[in-house]
Image (cartoon, rainbow, N blue to C red):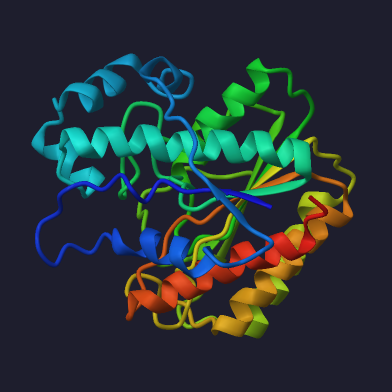
Length: 297
């Protein structure tokens, strides 16, 4: 299975910043010797591609470092030329993984899932919305039919909800912590709110219900799985209580249901802020391995 990495493109952060920049390198290293995973690097998108999902003024401000104090605070990351470059490469990884998934049935971006980026703003460590840009590129290359975004990050995907609110061909399903970021939400097609401390059994029951709802009478030409590691019990920002085994079962059920329905799936890794961060990287790597084991590439 093809997996696209962008970890070579870092950016400066203040000391002790919570963004887990190191995890991307750790995920790549964990998968480096897996014979079922081919790690590749994709070309970055261009700034014109960003306009497929974002307001021209937001793209201009990101490109040239014109974010004001409020925008920087909402993004949660200090702007730098390296941050802008990384956003292009990270999104390019998702575009490439989406194309590979259409060809092979499954593929992964070793990052991505930047689901808080809205049309005219970046939020919650998300500069550009990689999934929206990737889907726009696929549509331009001929993809037709309905698309499912199954968001299993612990935080509700407000950016995806906003960007696809007027698109009847895209169904956005989000399972997330009820009392977690973002605190002002835009409704998805289906939002499943989970109480603090939700563990494996209750989570998997909720996932089964969401999958049943999403797949009932619907046929999808494509799906994106936003497979955040932050529902983990040791995540610093998660507030849920899934074990590593529970997260692995989450991935098996979600991917198994989509593949059984014949849907090509692009996996993005999204959030994960575990203590230690090596645990988050281990969870992300296992997500990719589970996908690779299902791929008849």
